[in-house]
Length: 521
Image (cartoon, rainbow, N blue to C red; front, side):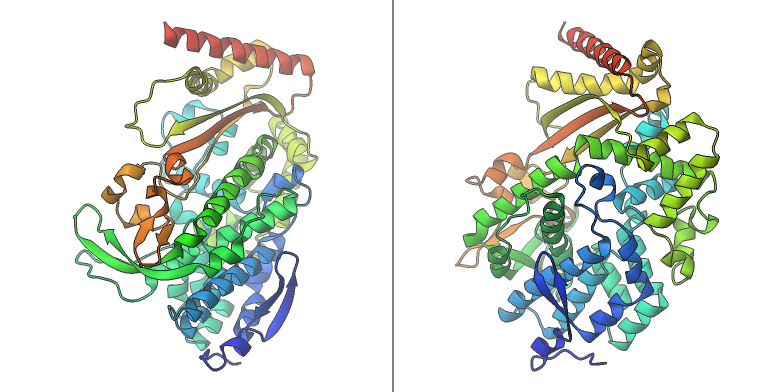
């Protein structure tokens, strides 16, 4: 196997084999990449759907994490070609980043982020980290609104797979690539010491190519998921953006110390600013229209609860009962069978053998697409910075009180309309315009450290001056990045009587109006 990638063989090296792809046409692969694709851990991704239960709303969205991984490899290859052509990186950097792109999703749970949330929820329960206010909600609402724990997410599981799966780690060691470095790129770690001086190597550049507003992962899932779903938000100027990428030096603050250090970072020419803004807006609307479609998130909420109960009831094997046990299976057949099919069959068996009506209802919803009843959807745009004190509009009050009413009165509403309170669910969903923590204030970005600004889009003009896109006061992104689009969707599973649904809507409306009126007095 030809492992060494040099200036003389770089074109031939990455065209050992060709694969046809419906989005990009032909994707060239190196001999090492072909070998990695053929490992059992990577073949497992053929059995994990990219879009979870969104296919119940967008039937074309049946593609898998395997095809997405190939797409991210292709995009990363294109990004590396440009940076290599600019003299910004070496052939070895190209080889390393393509491998990281190919393996970036190797740790995904069954049903992708849905399964990730379930295992994060279980981990939080076992660590006794559940807040008392969460316990006042039913299980459907709690798990539907759970935010994943970083340390048990698919990236950390993937890094562990790369480091410990014998097939993958052996191939990487033979190719003189450190599996731990690839794992660090995938988890987004940029090692920084307390007395950190300027960083000369490309560690931060690597991470930004995998984790930023303009990373290879986001490019592919926007283009692939929107195409498969039949929506047009993925029609972006990808080639123009990628051809405008450059490596620059950018100065970061070090935590709260006030010290600064400069590191090689990913930037895009100011000439491509409008194309970048179009991409960010396309991604925003893709999330709003597709990922957070109200029916899709209701189906996913039901599936999360059913998967959770299936694991707790022992219908999934004990060796995948929690994150630690999953880690212990890495490199075995048990891990390679940890797929959508295994979970689906286990949920079906559990539902058939259970005497609980809620379990039967969940399986009817998930297994036979019995659509949850839509009770109310409300949206709002709110400031990310809690210190911003804008006068509340009537919409602000309605949104705020809708959340309070469903969290406090869900049992009373169920009792009033005569349904099982466990069947009431709600999901609060947020969409960012750019990948930045909610605390970022565009006017004060200098106060924030590396962890905040690593993901931000950086612009470089023809004189070489570097700036942040969201700090450009002539940009729409500057005006919008300080706000968050939020939506709350209330639904009921297993309720098909139109009179009951209407009664629920009226009861909820009455309680929200009462809460708003009381606030305004």
